[in-house]
Image (cartoon, rainbow, N blue to C red; front, side, top):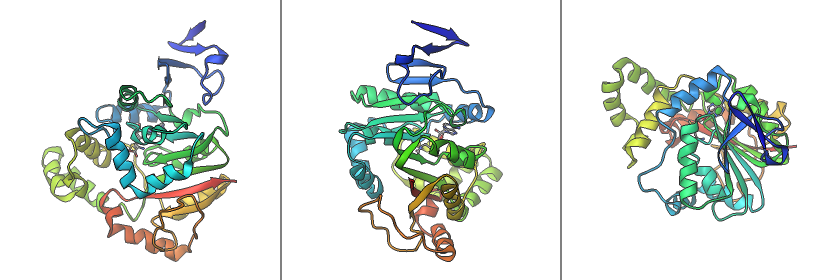
Length: 321
Ligand SMILES: C[S@@+](CC[C@H](N)C(=O)[O-])C[C@H]1O[C@@H](n2cnc3c(N)ncnc32)[C@H](O)[C@@H]1O
């Protein structure tokens, strides 16, 4: 029925899931959880790093309705889910503990794939999905740079907080945008060069103080840690934000260039590239790109707003031509 090569199972053609490249070596952890081999030294490093503190992790006793409530409170995600509709193929790249994938699958007939390099993070999402009988979300442990997915498969690709933890974010973007169908939507979240300044200052102080005193310092000065969150989520946040072995920051214009080079049209950014108020309805509609100066001001403003206090992430939506 199958042959084994280097401990991985090559399934017969009909057993290969629709999204995986033919002849890609993989083994199954369960019916909808596939593991490919991690070959790259950076993906091994990053998966070892997140293994001890899977990100973003779950709250104690969290349920599907808790997650659904959180999604509804987040206007971007709520409108994204409403705009996606039904019968779509959705990929979350670097899904971590996969809450978003689970929410995009919940109460829909969409087929979602949660992909990440860290088995332990996916395992938490997989167990949560299994416990809640959610069966339209597949899990894939894989490295982006291994390029394991077929071209033009997905209607939506969401990749938030991931590419800046790779050694070559531009190359990683090029690879994942190939997995998108023409007319498909890609949404990328990256640390911003300006917006992350407050975190960068805290990183320096944390490193100077060392982990024990540094954690006390962070409890006072990192606004995210003042929220009511589980100890697992606290550990995951401190690990991710202050000790990450691979991290870079980017600008709006840089990501817009990546879009252009990969045949993706700009749809909108959050915060807005033209400084307009964000209209959360019709989140997939095209908005103005602004100009170099409006984009610069939007990014500098991030420092002084909630974007800057929570890690300095910006999001950009694009559509494949
Ligand atoms: C900060 S977490 C983001 C998790 C989730 N997207 C979120 O927003 O909460 C970054 C994730 O990217 C994954 N990652 C980093 N490099 C990767 C690669 N080359 N291939 C696949 N996943 C990768 C890590 O395993 C980690 O779970």
